[in-house]
Amino acid sequence: MSYETFFKELNRKLARVVPGIEMAAVAETAWEIMGLKQERNAVILGHNYMEPALFHSIPDFQGDSLDLCRKAATTDKDIIVFCGVRFMAETAKILNPEKTVLLPVEEAGCSLAAGITAEDVRRLKTRFPGVPVVTYVNTYADVKAESDICCTSGNAAAVVESLGTETVIFLPDEFLARNVARETGRHIVFPTHDLRLKDTSLDIQMIGWNARCEVHEQFTVQDVETIREQHPDTYILAHPECSPEVVAVSDFSGSTNAMIKAVEAVDAPNYLLLTECAMGDNIAAAHPEKEMLRLCSVRCPHMNLITLKDTRDALRHGRYVIDVPEPIRSLAFEAVNRMLAIG
Ligand code: SF4
Image 1 (cartoon, rainbow, N blue to C red):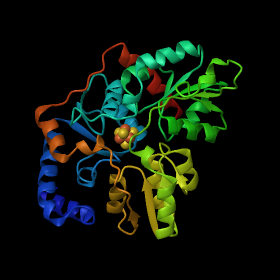
Image 2 (image 1 turned 90 degrees about the vertical axis):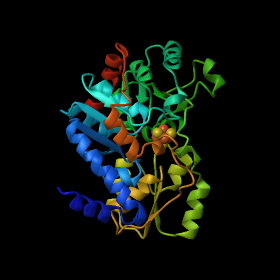
Image 3 (image 1 turned 180 degrees about the horizontal axis):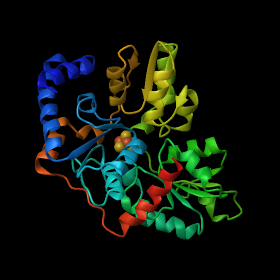
Image 4 (image 1 turned 135 degrees about the vertical axis):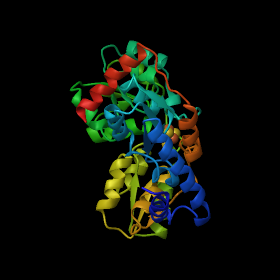
């Protein structure tokens, strides 16, 4: 493909979401990345929360963390550049120990992943011996290594039910845990909140933790009511990291990929996504016929660190290399692989 064709195609995709004055610079950087990608035999994975200029220009694969985990598991390239946050790049490394995995910005973290440590999980396992541990993929490798199985927001309920046990430990997102408990009809307790847990006669079916996503925890029932007053008939979609109260007053709840599919399938005058704002832009760019409303006062400070320029520099300089030492990697691999077998 020539640069002119690439520019035209990019301009067509991004016309609604990138100011015209920025297009030439965006296209030039993206074009350079495409060349470097080929030269270095690299694959680029782009999470749904990446800014539109990046999301619609350079990734070989786009999607949510489950999707990208699967893609990471099948690539034959030498280098994986993960346009997402650190726990995602770690998961790619866990699945591909022989490949070089690059994260374009070293500090791209996550409030959820930072909300629990491997030592916390070990303490829980001592306190509730024999109870299987389900860990959301939004965790670091050492936490995954202490777990029996991982899950994503797309398959969390299926993973919990697949275990066939009366009780599960579900970590670390408080709201996802509450939403999954509701979906699977389980009573949930939080050792961090609930002092009555000393009483072993309590009927405990799910044991949660108190970490939260700093983006999704901020959406409120009032936000939903205000949108419904101002824009009646808006189809509102909430990520399951939002509180159960917000999920209950929304029209749909699901992973980022499920949200995209729901917007594509449902005919409505407007749509509002209660998740990272960039995803609304990305859907608007892909579906110009859909009217996306945005609540962009809350942004993910980690996902927003990753830009086209950082990605170019990652490929130019081979940085920042993500490493997961053994035996943490192979233990974490078991937990991730069990999840991938479920789907
Ligand atoms: S959106 Fe939330 S869960 Fe995702 S990376 Fe940002 S802080 Fe973490």
